Length: 301
Image (cartoon, rainbow, N blue to C red; front, side, top):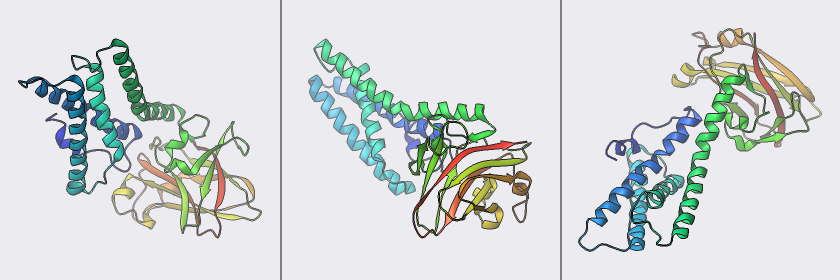
């Protein structure tokens, strides 16, 4: 508990951290408050007048909730991090795990009720572990699929993209394989989608390919951008990344980007092709919302 306490306020995942690291870090709340609940319960057992199991559970559960609220408030004061209600739920899960699996005597005197309680808590734990499981699976899959960056054939690929809520699996308009994604765009000044989680070492490859379906009856201007790690950490200037415009004809468009052009795009340096950190597609100030279809993003030699 002493080792873990500072990590409520220092360290942690950043904007570009891997999904697995973000999910694993969140699980620290479960572990910390599991240990905290055990410690608090042992303090109660050491009292001269021992409380009932139910009263001890309610006391520990409420204290965990209040301490969790205090931690969220202190995080806001110390580093400006907005309170996360899911962290509070993870805290309470840690408390439930302690009473379900470790504390003696058990919470319920009847065996069947204790078994049911344990079963419910383990289901909640499985739900909490699901984001980490999903992230690890897709990160390993992304490495195995490379140089395909995203072909949308597997269940979790859309979570490689920023804001996957604007992506929807599509089986009608498909360019390659069995699936593509429908990308919902708005009337904002810049509306688009960005690939965030992917293998970033693009050395040895010559071209970037992707297919985009334009449902309109006239051409549509689509902007493409690529940047590396240094771009992100040095101000993210417009002339420090790769930018290219495409005129999309109605229907499917198979688009190609020269990675040599990407490498030479920054005005005062060369792009670090071993640490590519972002690929994005966007439109500018559309009069009406529209949806494009995206498929088969890959590199080739």
